[in-house]
Image (cartoon, rainbow, N blue to C red; front, side, top):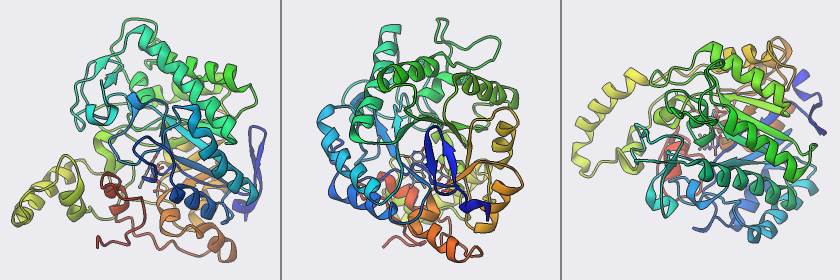
Length: 402
Ligand SMILES: Cc1cc2nc3c(=O)[nH]c(=O)nc-3n(C[C@H](O)[C@H](O)[C@H](O)COP(=O)(O)O)c2cc1C
């Protein structure tokens, strides 16, 4: 099968075409230092024949920290020895690991950042509702330097490369989207391409200055975004042309923003009980109201939720492939060897990436290797995703909250 043939990302050779997509761990202390469980997670994944591993999103500075407790930080050199241990273990297991770098921008709150919430503009996110302070040019330059500094810390820790999180409505994505980026300065939307790429452009340049031209940089982007933001295919293609020009080492194609998170990780059911217990916005105070709450939640969500299908970002990934020779990584809804093989063999995509099936079974790739017809036990219940807000380390719940 072509899935198990080697392929390259920059100077790296991956043993197969399956990548572990970034998955928030919830395994760090409140200063963003990784705990033993973080080390154990990557130690275990790296023993399981995965082509490469991408960590969960790590904040480049406390001001860009997410609301989820236990997020990793890559904001200070004192963290390097902790990540070094993780990378050494992964490398001893003959595996490759990237660190995902993120700044949440407006998709967080003041309790989490310990100060301001910053944004490309002062427009609020519909879900997070914090009023962001619009970044000055000076603040933007500081933040760009923080991305470059974080990449250097990651390199010094032994990570094989970094992934810039430019998807899911986080800061880099906020710069890209004209519905959020209304700036009139150099960091505004380019009138020709209708996307705001200057921030990402300088972040890539500065990372290369700090880490060298051959330190691999992946970029995760959203193909489509929900109707609140309207991102056309033309804008998407312009974004691919931009990344092609920047010669990044790989592009992962995801979907949407955290305003409608359940469209990023689509489910076969909606985890109402977990939402009512743990979601910071919609949790229910009085349990007896659950039936009424569920009725309203169903009406509200069914209007907005996209259906789960296998390979649900494939149309955008194949569109990207038509416009660049840079390796394309398609994420979203892969659960069988056959689905992956079709995408690699017939659609000529370079890699697929997987989050939930590997949370459910870290040895999923090994199982596919011995039986290509193997189907993941993941039922896409999405309790794992809702529980990211719960203070508990991320794990698979197999459809039940105990
Ligand atoms: C529990 C959980 C945590 C996630 N954490 C991240 C993250 O830190 N960074 C990121 O870019 N995407 C994150 N995602 C999205 C996944 O990387 C992936 O894009 C999405 O789940 C679709 O892939 P899948 O169908 O294989 O799960 C997360 C998803 C889940 C369910």
